[in-house]
Length: 283
Image 1 (tube, rainbow, N blue to C red):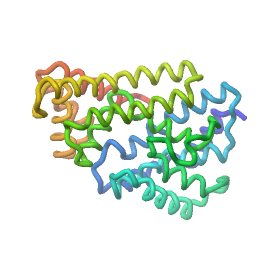
Image 2: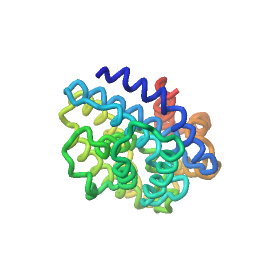
Image 3: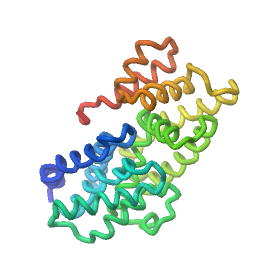
């Protein structure tokens, strides 16, 4: 099977309806960290991973690819209903509605698709799927590609937005994120560390996120307050004001902040964020 042509067929069938449903789900919910753009990025990463696995003679059926594109585009749609860690249940409901409406013909094991979506956000990796070794299993593909969107400057932004939205105090964010990141990167390495180039590329992105939250932790210790407008604290406070408070998109907010800040750390962070979010493949 030519994986490139099969991926193209799957996209021709499902990309527009899935993106539209995802967009519709977030039309009344301002949550840029998990909206349709997040889901598109996860699908793009999944395609990258699938191509790498095919080079290792690990092949995917049409049913496999259909389930992957559905899972990647619907796994976090439940965040439009609830932002807590049980949002996978709400995503599963939206997926079930999608299946009933569009009736994809080549899906086998529908219940597993729904179960994987419900359990995808288990970042302790204790659910029944997490221990499966098969590198092409739907949970492993979805969970890892979702994890990889938590890397980079985009990942730092996503952590900030959702943790603030959940009411987590700024003082606690760095410690919580570093623990969560450790779990994610360990699962990524255990699952796909053998894909040397793929692993190396995304570890560079991981390093950016790790450095940001390490800087944040150190800044809070040194300054003993969370009101700063410089460094990583400045980044967090500006995201809180311009994205969460004023409901701007991350790119709109970033461009405004770049024009109006004098702090080089803040300016460089938001320049990098705009660059990541404006990549040609996403557009």
